[in-house]
Image (tube, rainbow, N blue to C red; front, side, top):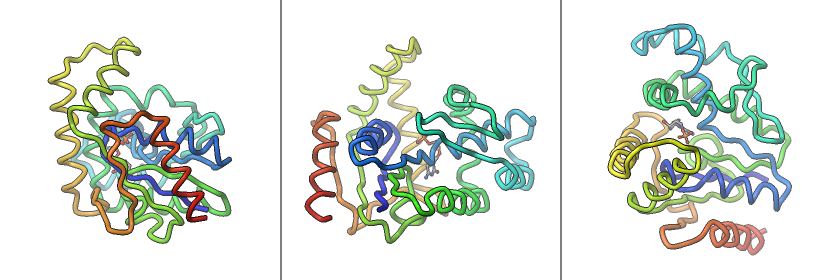
Length: 216
Ligand code: DC
């Protein structure tokens, strides 16, 4: 079984995917983490974000792996924390629109899911990676609510960023995500749309489980 969850940054895809994966015994694959690995290696090798050729080479050469605890490994090294740094976050928006990088990531995402029951989250999972997924969800929330959630998360992790800055940053990411030439974040008729603005994580998880159960 394949469950695809797409949606904008800060919509809660990761947390929801984690709970659903645990409940249904699925392997969770966070595709954003994979693009972040390409960005991290680009930074580490000191490659300019204008050097597309080299970035494509990096995407093809690196080995990305997850373990059952959701740790992320880049060429065997645990980079779970590092890929969340501000530097990686700002670089990833330059590497993820490159069509050949996407092509390579999509190939790796399909390979990682082969033979497994999977819940995969990202921006183009139900549209590009697994258009025939058993269940496709689009998880949304208003910009203000996503900024509010991020602010809360940041204060728990001692990251000091104002609500306004977080909001602006999310707004830019929304724009970038929906204006990519390849693999853009789009809503489709065959996705189950969830507006989680006024829902708790538990309610979203319950809703997804109900949909999967009802249609199984
Ligand atoms: O979900 P995230 O913030 O960890 O994603 C990191 C970046 O990767 C973000 O710029 C969007 C991009 N991304 C993508 O282009 N396609 C995906 N399937 C997942 C993430």
